[in-house]
Image (cartoon, rainbow, N blue to C red):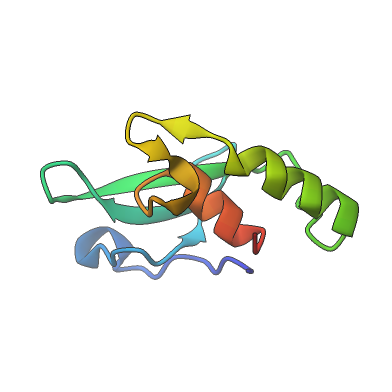
Length: 94
């Protein structure tokens, strides 16, 4: 998945679950997710210094297997849309 630049009204409209290229240095993507209180919160994910090698089958398989085992307070984070791991895996097409 190729991340596009965020539109100018990104901060005001706050589109939920639509990833964009991050504006924060050191991060590759950002997305608004639903917070615990139901309000949208901005989530940054990925490391911009690390190249994405999803076109290399061995690297992709290794990353997908490694990131599938990450757990959070609510269980596995790979299936939770409100976690950075979910969006990073989606960016890699896991």
